[in-house]
Amino acid sequence: MAPGHDDPRQHPWWQHVPAADKRGVQRRRRWRRLGTALGSRSGQLALLLGLYLAIALGMLRAGAGPITLLVVLPLVLLPALAGLAYWLMWKDFHH
Image (cartoon, rainbow, N blue to C red; front, side, top):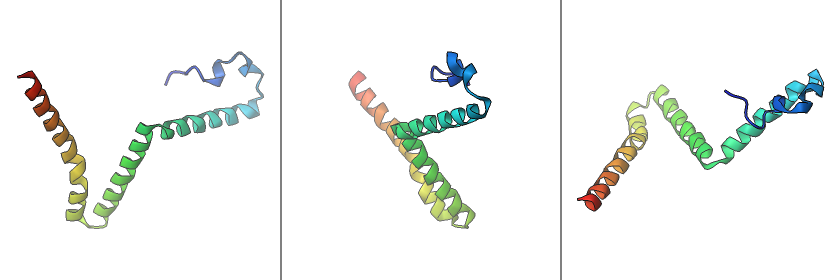
């Protein structure tokens, strides 16, 4: 990962920060970036999707195979349904 514009090591004063404090500054920066990522809509969606999949995998490990299939089915079928709707609308307007 390339250093970003908010990377404290790129600042001219970074050389004057005591060595004991540098680790804390970098840790706070990582937490701030994580908080910003989770604050965005795509970050929240990824977090919810991960939680949903974790619950489904937990159900699968618990031995609830058929129910897990029903739980995961919308994740598989909704993108296909959206693609079909897009294709039908495109076809309707371009033919």
